[in-house]
Image 1 (cartoon, rainbow, N blue to C red):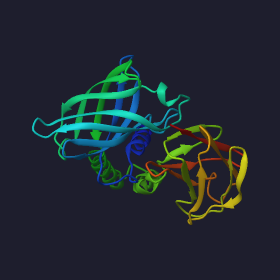
Image 2 (image 1 turned 30 degrees about the horizontal axis):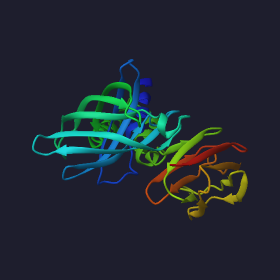
Image 3 (image 1 turned 180 degrees about the horizontal axis):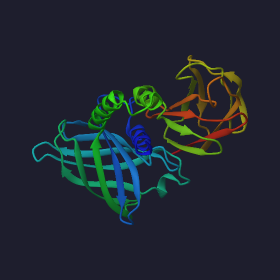
Image 4 (image 1 turned 45 degrees about the vertical axis):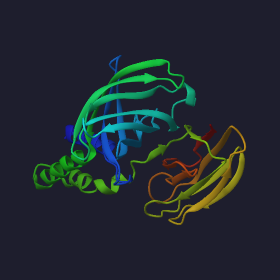
Length: 291
């Protein structure tokens, strides 16, 4: 039974239904030269020879980071390569220039048909200096989902598995909506933007349960005791300084679990979605850093 629950957690980590169907989605891991293993997920689309998209490193972890990707695809030789070119957001305490970007070496890849690929990468800082090298192993998310469906059918047919475990499998699609970037208490999410303004949107992405939240911008209250609903509350924010701090404070907890609000930040180029997970009186911060 413990192995079954562990498998559920792994699948939930890799599953995602909130991303565009136009993207190729692969999930797997990075193996660094010092033997450390980090979860890794990529989303990209191929337009002729041009590759664009983004990556998620340490998905669900304390150092979760989203980076933009650019690359090259050679349809004649079936070769794919890409590199990270900038951070969209990170939970690590670093600056944009401190981050070690992945430069993935060309590998055999056939667009629309390859379900698994692996290869080596070199890490580079923005100035080109080497940081750390390693390997990447990636499986098609479509393939992972297909396997999950087969496992779910087996679970439902089994008389040796209790109904509570079966419910976990049958409700996976509902639980996928919770696989957003989690904003936990006393943590800081750093968002990088080239824009002069952003829109902060707050809403309840599930069943409305009466959660109440307050919002401060650089220490000044801009939204007080706001009851979250399915209707989006949009707060325009001008980025007048190099760092703009947004603090989200849980005033009350509704009838369902903790204070959970879907938070979206849109700067015209990037759209970041996150979910608060706070108890009464707890707060979390988003720092918007201008590039």
